[in-house]
Length: 324
Length: 272
Image (tube, rainbow over all chains, first blue to last red):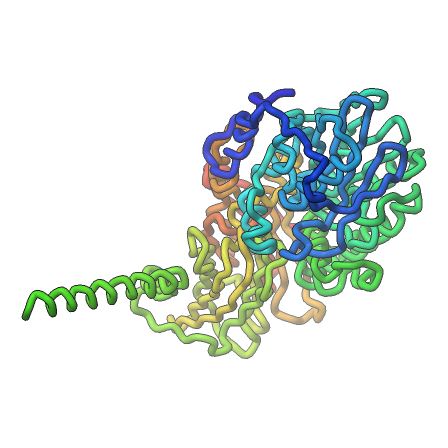
């Protein structure tokens, strides 16, 4: 555990959050089971022995959903627990923590973020009292820090002041350069950084005891994929990920667990359709505006939240592919 | 005046002051910066608003505030040469985004246009002000809902962006009708166009500003336009524009950034 070696950042207020880690009390709160009212917690399913997943809603963040719009999971070893993503607010992050505490009292030693997006990291502060290592792709800190102001402002507006309360940007204290193994006692998690795809800081996690894969937002199901990295990189990575041999995979948005390679096929089709349409329009000399009105619209009925993200996806794809 | 009434009048005055303070705050937040901006940029010159001489296309809601497509069009009915075109985003830290001065190769005889992509920092009015050859000013305005475009780092893969810096593409698009008088051209430069507002995680400071400040586009020896810009142009500056048909319709482009680096490129011969 490393409380004092977080990134040294001085100039931006939001990044003082990283320093807050240094003052987390070392005393662990004693959970009280008897007499206390059942704490609010979110629903989790045990998809494999010791592997639990919460399924988020297919929605944009709102005061009603409290930022509960992505999947989160946790893996219980004989010594410790690892949390994989913390949802979109401290409030719902606490409910995730309560759900963990309903299953086990083992220490929460690792909080892993699969990438930088607020719906996966803004619950991190709910785990400060556990003094865990915050683990992520080594590129997450740069990506999140440079977007922190905008993420905080947008989420304050969308979640409302009550739900937004307590949210802070917590940057990783343990950065994964390439791969890393975390020992939870009797089981090991394998963390692998991936090439730029959904973002430039995606991380996949394999629970080696059960073979369960956590793809984070490299896998979307039902919820339209969102492109914040590279469409070329993502399509290439999907080809690799489809070759993985695993009994089940957990998407960043979608059902609790899915099967490979079928799980990746709708997402692959969506991204390939955008790439083909945009490439054709660029070849015909069409503009970005024209592309945002036509490219990929045949996918509209296949996804939830299409109208919220599709134009942004086409914009990002166009700005990337026009350089080919 | 008795002491009592004196005190009462003070109370009223204080109440009025307090009321005015409360009243002033929201007004200031919604302050219309345009009159000041207009005075600073165009002085006392009259500006005709929304007279159809210039049309501005911008999205009502910017899906990506760091990459907002903007098109300025002069309809075909507007004849004669154009002098200049100024793009302004009221609420950006430096509101005057770009000023284009047109030359003899800018062309006439059809709808003339310039498209680019900009960062928009807050819900803001976006304005295009056209100066026609009779020295008159014409303005089109759109309100765009976008927030945080200036500080938002647009580079999705910053490591790759730095490797490609300086890569430039210049394209020409001949008109569909082979006798039409206007061609289209496009200039693209791989450049961070960083505005000094983006945080550098490595140092904890801000990435030093480095942005494109001047673009000169020529067809042969004739000027199409010269543009001076500030940092509100998006990363990887991209301009698409009409220009007049000439002999070989090749474009020569020179771009200068704030570091003094000059980037040059030529288009392929027309029709390719």
